[in-house]
Image (cartoon, rainbow, N blue to C red; front, side):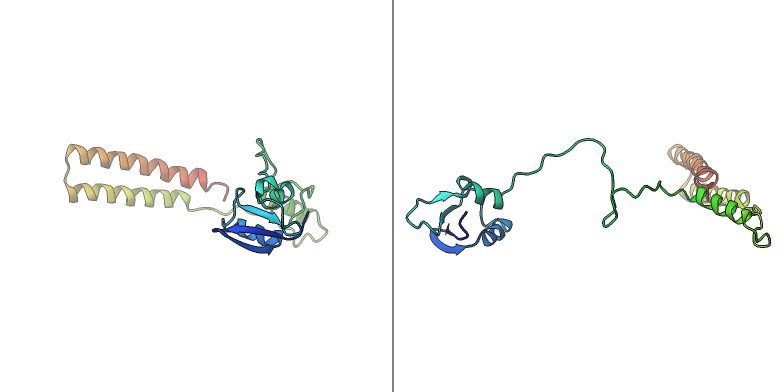
Length: 174
């Protein structure tokens, strides 16, 4: 493979160019497989499109890789591919730390965790009453027609169910 090539650009001959320069020109779309080149070592040779110069075409326009279907493993950047560790479960980690602390010889530091009471029920009722009051208040402000009544009723049902789901199911592990 020659290290220098002349290039026909806009009716003029430019070069000699290295394959790296031709690769850069292809990167900015100033070059395509039909662009004409000639080897600088053989100036009397005919001009040929880049697609007919196999070594240059393979360097400048490599064949795209075939997509692979199926499940692939995700590896974070800079991390080794297989660390041998399972995914971290925070609840299991806290349980293991508590068990290790209880098994230690320092029993003064190994106090069992006492469940802390929550104000979840109080928060649920306060938010439910406040949301319902806003919905009913908007009914008084906008007027009670059949369409408004359906919207207010649907808001009350949706708000109550979503508030229950957030406070008693989504936030339960936390």
